[in-house]
Length: 273
Image 1: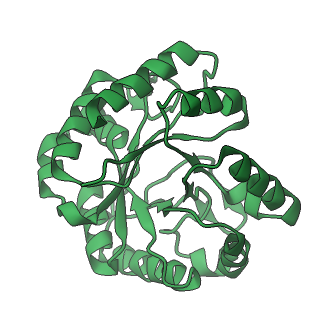
Image 2: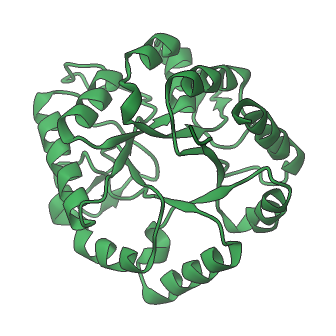
């Protein structure tokens, strides 16, 4: 079985570090959050040039669709995004199972939808529409960290995620740090949940670090710190059960800690081989 490619989320502050890590054999690929780049031809051309220079496989991880929002089809210009993607060949395409937008309002982060049957059916329909717009390409959906739950929800976030994957036939981008967040804040048994996931549906893994939010005491998915030991433990469990194509480390703040980020890459490389 081929080993997963290790990727880092590409952001301009990490450009030179990513190139160095690629040369050192710590990285195999990059993850791109393409929303900003695909909005106009100039940005898309810049992204094309960056990817051509790097010369490595890449994935597209969307952040602005808000797939589970009721007004997704009316609000999001899916056809324009699909047209802009024709100049690219990402190995994987993913988005979050979130409801962070309504009308012109967009929350800069992930907000949970109501986890019930009507919301599930609507979300599955949206996933199918995205896949169709992308020419039948499989869309991966990511489990998000829920800092709250709607009173109207009738299932857990984890049950909602697995049902969305099963009912749409899409793949799962399994974020292990988000499971760690739910362990710390909600009492989830992440190892037990991993054992419930059908192995064939997991196409990609996300890893990250976070911090405790002092006013509330909750642990936050900040993408701003080194990988916790527990996330590495979950990675070992996941690699024993699943066969992901990409393992992505997300880092979106505290970019000066190059040594810490390098240690994270070395720890992941050690576990993947």
